[in-house]
Image (cartoon, rainbow, N blue to C red; front, side, top):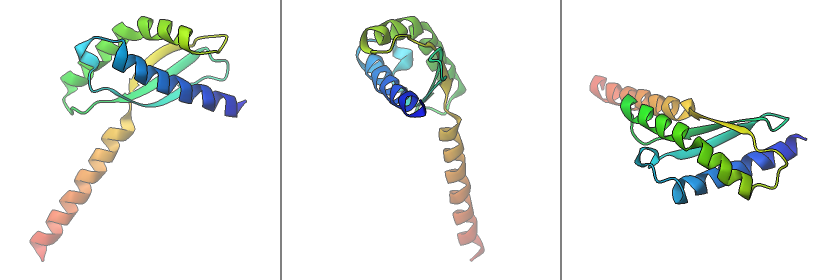
Length: 119
């Protein structure tokens, strides 16, 4: 069963990315990258994780608002594209791993700079 869920998650990620590029016209979702998908075992709910290029909180809020507004369109498009018997309820969440990675990179750069100043 887990293998099937993994395939469904990959298919949803691929299709949502395509829908965002080709069907959603909202400028607030430009630059949004789908980074992951988690689907429950019963296919009832789907968490879609995304990242944006901007670090600004206002840009994140705008992207979330745009995705929330586009959710019914995305779900309707998925119902035409997926071959599953049930289309899950969608929810979008900003991917925390991207910010965490950027924070780690910043700390490493700071250590590198501090090391050169002492030497």
